[in-house]
Amino acid sequence: MTEINACGCDPARDSEKGRSASDMSFLDYLLTIDVRTSLMDRMMQKMGVDRQLKIIPDHLAVANRAADRCRSCDHQAECATWLDSHEQADAPPQYCRNADLIARLQHAAGPR
Image 1 (spheres, rainbow, N blue to C red):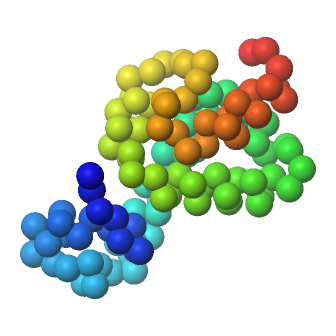
Image 2 (tube, rainbow, N blue to C red):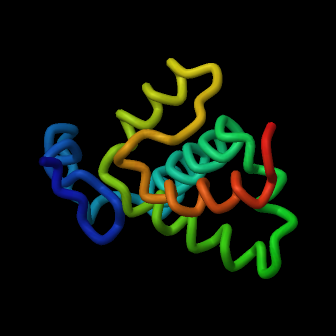
């Protein structure tokens, strides 16, 4: 199990690179957030709910909470591999922290 600290870093991996988590620049931190948010965007597109997410009431707050769940997930590498290997899917992988939201958005959108 990989330990992720408060800044979203893997301390073991960073120490292998000769730096501690406290040496991580703010830009490095923002890049890790951007990668995780990108995974969420790709998942929403892959599930066909990206448009639905943008039109629901209070969509900005819902999207921000979804991004927070994605950013706190420990499955980024698995998620990226899953996204790369699936052209289309009916449901996200079992570990997806946004699976319930995706299911609700799919239901609201109707059949595709």
